[in-house]
Amino acid sequence: MVHRNRSRVRRATVSRVGPVAASVLHRTDNLAPPRDPAAVWGRRRVLLLNATYEPLTALPLRRAVVMLLGGKAEMVHEDPSGALIHSASRSIAMPSVIRLRVYVRVPYRARVPMTRAALMRRDGFRCGYCGARADTVDHIVPRSRGGEHSWENCVACCAKCNHRKADKLLSEIGWTLHAVPRSPTGQHWRLLSTVQELDPSWERYLGDGAA
Image: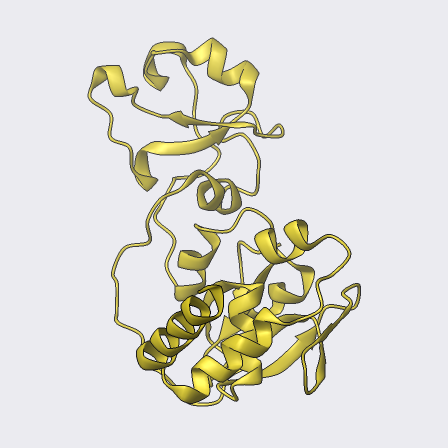
């Protein structure tokens, strides 16, 4: 009974993704696990570049390996600290950056979504009021007084300034901003808005905000 159920699951997988992709998925399921599988397979991300080296997204490690084994992508940078990943037929180094073999057109999106991670990178992890190391986000015009949750109304902020400012306007306490907050532009900022930690090998492809 167990054997028949496994056969049915295997046939269903092949029908959904095709025989070639299913074969690749089967091989990656048999990959020899790293010493800490949960840490590597669960949290590790790989930068995916378009054929033109434009950054597209950060993939889970397993998905990146599937694309390499299936011939849809090629290795650009290996993870120097990563172990070899073994399948039934070959071994590959753990990837850090991969590139699509065929160019894909990316739909244009005018505005980058604002997240805490991206805003901190925009402001260089420095408080918009005093320049100290930032550890939170502050609304320039407080939400309680009609302020929006937007790129133009938010800055990185240290805990001391955040406490002192509270729900006051800058004009009421005589403060000024170090720089006028603006919405960042560029495809790489979409990726920065979703990733908490960056691999150093990604920085050359992500431009300003990655450092």
